[in-house]
Amino acid sequence: MTTKIFQTIPRNVWILGFVSLLTDISSEMIHSVLPIFLVSVLGANLLTVGWIEGIAESTASVLKVFSGALSDYLGQRKGLAVGASQFFQNTLKQRV
Image (cartoon, rainbow, N blue to C red; front, side, top):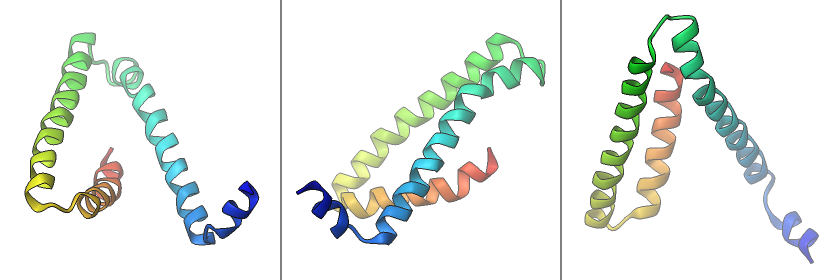
């Protein structure tokens, strides 16, 4: 039964899913090593790393609120989520 379900999923979906998995893994690897890099290589103190992490988390929280309000206003949650996800993956991750 489950093999039949897996066989009905198109090949392109499997490929895009695998690429998305690799992108997520690379993002998490960078995210966990970045504070160590900032302190050991760039010579930042722990207070600076804390400020950077705090600003990043605050920005993410504020964007969640505004994107939720925009999604409610437009009524297109799926399209907004897919478009924003692709935009951020393609533009912001290349700059990090």
